[in-house]
Image 1: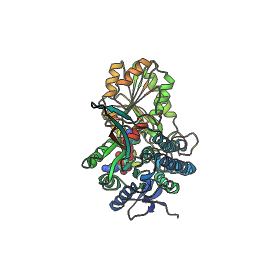
Image 2: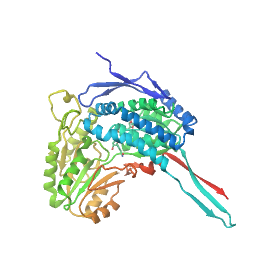
Image 3: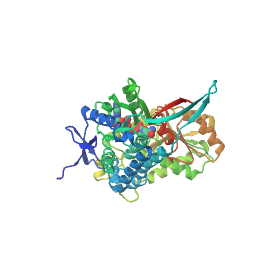
Image 4: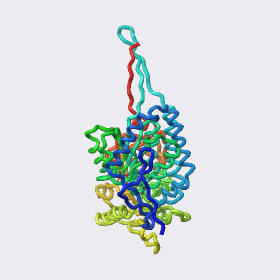
Length: 487
Ligand code: NAD
């Protein structure tokens, strides 16, 4: 029997093993995919020290165009091993092959190229200030790297979300220590190889594997040499990290959970709205922070909409990632499935009508050892039900009717989260009016998950702190100093 691969750490330009290991299990069929080295406290500390030292090395003297050229080389390296990366993402997450090919990989490549180019193109302010004595003050700003950035990523879009932070952090001259999710370590391990092959100087990019509390994640956020933490994950993890970095007053960028709404007005293009809401609720098996879990439909079309969404959900094909016509893979792990199933049980206790789903499928093969659930739709819950207020992070939505614009605005805003909202209407006056008042960071009108990397991205309330994307990323990953010169 061949031994499973061992995924090493990458510290100061070298691959490292260690005594502690954990298993990487397939969510498709429960197979052992690989073993992963779990970084101990000393290894995390060495990774951070290497990143800190690398700021004083050649990397610290690279100009923005030189850094950009290096990041384009990293993007070329990912492109050259496209199929290896696809295989790694699909193995860890179980998602359909076509999704990794058309979403994860192109976005990971774009995350390096876009921020490399933006960092070269960005120009800062300068101004002259006349003085009472007739003299002039000349002000200009310079950007400096923050220092060592800890990048902590979740499992739902592993490479896409890791590189979304790495691209701008490196483009602005920082050094990084990354910790991918313990559930999805494989594509980050490949990325370390690409960084090495691209000639990224030792210490600029470091990779530590492990868990959160009592492991690599916690060690990283407590390290005094870290200047900033860029984190994507659950809101309560964000809160724990905030406490960890409070004493050092470190910079933080948080992209956290959501309980996103879709609002469908009776005047909407009905078919487009049904297709859009089906996609936003079930895409990637509901495991995107932007997925819709609350759907509000104007009363005259409520029954018809529920029936149409039910039909869509029941036509989605669950299966192996490489199966023809597969729409949905499993959830990321059996552990996460337990959480989603607990909400299926809770919904029944809270009085939901189960329109479709609410259970696990039976395949009669190895997939029964995996983490599949059926796409699920509920109706009939009150707005205060836990299933309507808490993030579930699975292929599930609750649909409720509404009667007018003011009412729906207050119901959408009555949420502890504030990440995204999709409005489906053909009346643009109404869409613009609501878009200004809905308390979220991202509003889509007759669309969902369409992204331009130059635009701001982030959430309000429990959904996050700060914005990334375009110049917002450049601002977060740099320290801006004003220089004032008396002329
Ligand atoms: P998670 O918070 O459990 O874990 C995220 C990362 O944090 C992992 O690498 C984990 O090991 C690490 N971690 C956990 N505890 C830690 C601690 N105390 N200190 C330091 N690191 C710690 O999140 P998850 O389950 O991996 O991801 C799903 C969540 O991510 C959902 O809530 C989803 O909405 C959110 N998410 C948000 C966005 C966004 O852009 N807003 C994008 C994707 C996912």
